[in-house]
Image 1 (cartoon, rainbow, N blue to C red):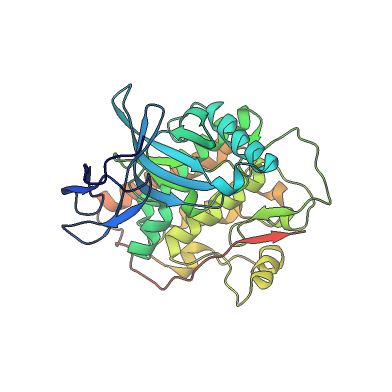
Image 2: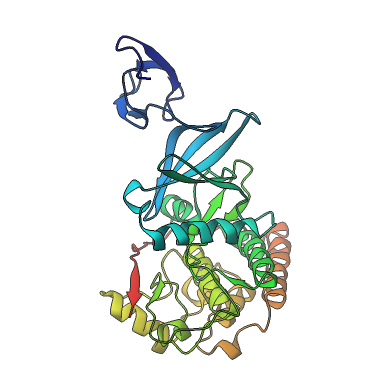
Length: 338
């Protein structure tokens, strides 16, 4: 039933938080300017008990909305699959696989999936809300994220990846934009869209998907992938946050990818003298070109980060550690091989 043309809908602007009336004749998800701040707001959309209220982010598979669960009375995130992909069987299977991968994992620092459902032509995923920005946003804002914060993220995400590994799962797309924060500042690992089982048969002719600035050398060379590939990508992500730029910078994507294989990593603590040696050495080892030269387990990587954190806290308490200073940062791009 269509709303009356002169009806009004009361909504909250996600930008200025003002309660404003918008025309009830707008279609679900249709946008209109806020009468208070002038920024775009949308007509809410109802999917079963979930009211989609404002857009958080958009990606290749779908759009994530801040939503309200009217049955349980809680705020959630709803990832709505793009309409043009809903008829694509491969895309739907990938969307469902992401839901199953996350739902199988129970860890504080992995985004929790509540349900995967469909209403009419709309396929959607309901998740825990983490809308306090990403690590990528923090790098954008700060240029260099404080070392203690970087170590905290590293320790927690390493623990999250260890849990995924216990369930036989590799993430394969660790990067700053896939680490979100909730309202309590807790990091949450998201986007298991490229994840695969550790025992899955490897197709040497299949394309390799990933983000060139963080992808492990062995994945580029298609010589195999394991949890050590995720360890490398996480260390590259932490390195970026710490020093203010990606580990390897070059004019083209192909040159960046080649650098992952051939160019020696400059240790973080030699680039920025205020970074502790223990942190720099831990990241350098985790980013060794040869997988066998990295930490043999997530536990050992996590313990190295925890030791660096303890040493840093002691230095800060004794007044011997200076604060991090900003430095320039370059952008990122997507890359696929095959």
